[in-house]
Image (cartoon, rainbow, N blue to C red):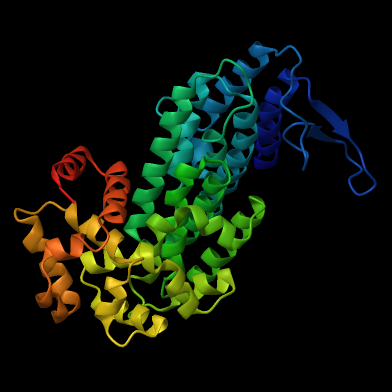
Length: 382
């Protein structure tokens, strides 16, 4: 069987899922005189809802079984083009075939192949794998699905994708950016947080092609969710603000590009993010970045920025839940790194400036903290 015949055979195998759901049809046009297969569910730009007709499970299982064997054949593994095409048709099979055994990325051989292909040496295969992966972590529109499988799939997929991104391999940057954008189209808001953070990190990449692609994908993702960039970022500033500004001095392009996305100046962006970013900037001793925020505010001294009634409660809340033998001394030491003016105060005086707001910020910080930090909040007296 020559390569073209192998392509046709793979296409036919993938169409068994469409045939099983009775959504397959032949279409002939003037542009394409040879009739081609189309599916009213997986081939259309605006697909109908998931097929409700009687499903022919034996067709589906046959197609999946044949496909699972094909991707292990030596001839298949030697063909670059065939592997890319197979990944594209796997997306079709995944959209139709929502059986737990096939969908479970921990057990499914096609699913495992998809994950492995994210790091393939073939660019087109990596990109196709990212698009296919999004199907395995989207909500299947069928009753009776084991939602624990979807939960595990998302945890595994996000973990693997994060691991690949953190390696920072230059040849995988494009794959990761596009995959994170695909993931962002299907996960919940809570899980989207990680995808947004990783995409923003790529905005700060020194390679302008990489940062430009991240910029474009963020715009596309916001448009897909029918939101402006400002609306898109809004739920995530609590975790995202520090990532945006922490390298403002060494890599200003991150904040600049986020400001461009928001259609505002960097100074206005700093003013908007100060409450979310300052606690982490104080904790990590980023004094030079705090100075930039102070300049945007028009403060004469950097101490004024941290003592502002809007900022101080959230700063103290984060510092007070850190793991330190003497939390009071640790807190004052970190504040002292920002400004020597701290010598004029003690922690009790600072806590008395707005005890109710500080207590509320502590409870909010505890909600997102681990058990050890929650316990420390319970022991504090504000």
